[in-house]
View 1 (spheres, one colour):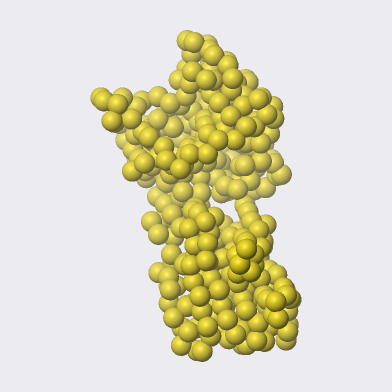
View 2: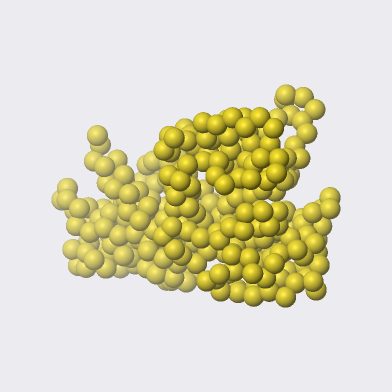
Length: 353
């Protein structure tokens, strides 16, 4: 394997160490190489902290002069929460820069690379660009369109049911799959559920390991009880209740009056609001009506479907509200992946636009 791929793959591994911690910034990894050896590594640990390039350069010190810097994402050339990385690269005396993906932020988007070339640094771009762009799909969506990247998660039987006709849903999938799903929550900024899920399941909406995550509740008629488990151990500023009747609610939460669309909270408006709050990725966990509306309005960017080896027959459907007139009108997924999670199967894919 070409050494460039080896070093960029290592930078990719480093970037993943920031998973669930860097938002609204992207995950980025960096590797410094000199005389065929790695002399320092870095990654973006958290929003507001050193960027990956600076993290690696600080570790290398004066040894960085004359080295090659491999970085998964185009270095920033503007001042944001931190100074521009382009200046740190110049100051360190980097000889060559190898970049994976371009930064979709209009402040950068190739401009940083052009600047560094003008300063005499050799620049290569595009190594593993597609894979590394996929790494930050949530950031790319948010920075380009102002809305969070939306993932809809379903836990269902083989025949697409999430609960019995009486509403019993605990548990469709195995404890192993549920634990796995709770750990995946760590990578999101927020979890969204509808009021029916709150009333029937009374979820806590916590992550594994624990972190502060925003909890988004769609409650058109103001029915959420003040003693719902999702409020336990949660700061009021981390719970957003969107409702058409804010006066009916006295909660330790941010109660926000939202417009109504077809008799329900306008999900598109909510997502725009969340994007303005710098939430880059949102996980919809229920219920079937919320997932169905999000799919119908083309607001879902990714599907995660946990399927248990069980057949229910009559029961509540995992997706409700979709009414295709023909087979061609169905929601189709692309770039499908399959993983066995305990006894269950996790199917992931992206709705075709």
